[in-house]
Image (cartoon, rainbow, N blue to C red):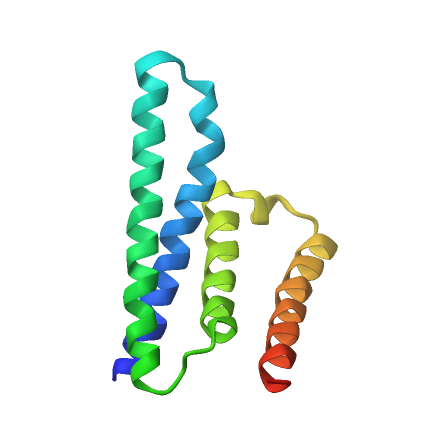
Amino acid sequence: MNFFLGIVLTIVTGLVDGQAFSKAPQIWSHSGTERVIEFIKTLTIFFVGLNTYIFSTYFFYQHGVSNALIITLVWFVATIISVALIGGTFAALSPIDKLISIAAIILVGFLYYRGVASE
């Protein structure tokens, strides 16, 4: 159960970070106090994501997983999917670009796996 909670928290972290990554570039379209408020909002979202990530590592550690590559892989995939869904950019991609982006995520996962397996 704790391992599952670690995965869920890592996915939540990716979704939260994806929202912050999507929001950050929009800060600069504001000015003055509104820009500062948007900056603080984005920073707060990142803070929530960071804390959720740290808590997730506890549950992984309880099951003997202390390798950052494995934990980060789950986070990476969730974050990329989150950014694509929030921004709506994935739906606008051509079929070949969708295939390439999915392949890229899989290949990065394979690289992570190879890095972990070689340790």
